Structure formats: structure tokens, C-alpha cells
Amino acid sequence: MKPRTERIKNSTIYNLYMKILIDNGHGKETPGKCSPDGRLKEYAYTREIADRLVTGLQNEGIDAQRIVPGENDVALFERVRRVNAFGKDAILVSIHCNAMGSGAGWMPANGWSVFVGNNASMNSKRLARQLAQVALNRKVKVRRPSPQKLYWTANFYICQKTNYPAVLVENFFQDYKDDVEFLFSDKGSSVSRICCWKVLRIIKRNIKEICRSLNS
Image: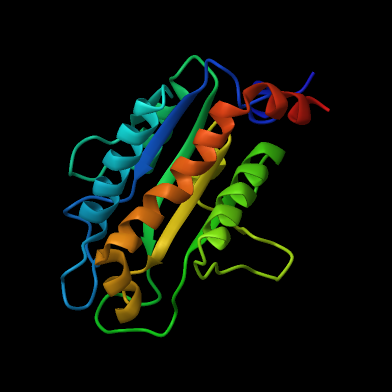
């Protein structure tokens, strides 16, 4: 028999009783996690987006919750413990802003991207592809390792250690000036939220069909 973690990760994730867990990156005391001009602070931006996302999902009747409700950073092992403590099927979406440098100066890298862990399940990869496709449909620049692959693979602790399907979303670059301006625009803030919200809303509306496709 497969280990419990693998069974959970590859089970039907889109069911009527699932919970959407939203993780927002870092904390107000985490050094270097801001734009070079100090306007965009990752902890504050990701928490704002997480709050809007959770509210939007709850308004759609989807059980959603933030795992780090406060402003201070929470260690990764504790974040994972909180996720794995839920005794029901769940999906984890970790929200971040990307950076090429240390925050000391503007850098050339830009765009939106989504990651899964090195040990990602099929459902984690499927969720990542769906998120990336929504971003592409909204005419967002999606960074990808190849034209055919819409998501990146990395050794992100929270994705690798979580018992459930998990993705980490990098909402543009906080050290690329045009990305920062975009994030502060109405369109930018809505893209960060809607890319996740729209996929999960589609899941809710098409639950039976999605379950059948996942089990086929």
C-alpha cells in the first residue's frame, strides 16, 4: 500500500468537503522582502491578496482559510504542521512576490509564475497548470521553464512537506519597477487574486465532471 502522504496527494482533491488553505509569504520582520524604493512590502501585499482571496472564495460557498493570519513570520515547519493538521481533503496555495536580487536595486527579471515541489503529485501539477492557464488567458506574462511547461519545480519546503496538493505562486517581481507599478494598479491586484480565485470557482461549479476526470 502507498504511504498515507502519497495517497492523500494523489486522491481526488476536488470534492464537496475540501478546504482551501491560503498561505501568505514571510512576515513584517523578514529582512529584504520589499521593493528597492520601499513601497511594496511582500508581507503586506500578500496578506492583502490572501484576505481578498479567502473572502471571495467564502462568498462562493467554498471553505477557505488563511494559515498565517498575523503579520509576523511563522516558521515553515509550523506552517506545514498547521496544514497537515486538517483532517479533511485540502488544497494549499502559497502566495508570494518574486525577487531577482536582495532588494537593494531594480533588476531586469519580471513576470508571474507558479511552482510545485520536487516531489509534486499529479494533482499539484494539474492545479499549477490551471492557474498558469488562467494567467495566460488574462494576458499576463507567465514565466515558464519551456514553452510546453507552464509551471516550475523547486525544493520549496511548504510544497514538498505538505500532505495535500500544493502550489506556490510568485506574483510578479518586487524588484522590477514596472511589475511594482502593475501590482499597485487595480488590474495588478485583481490578477494576483483572480488567477487563484477563478480556478477554484471553476472547480466548485464543475465538481462532478472534475472528479470523474481525476479518477479516470
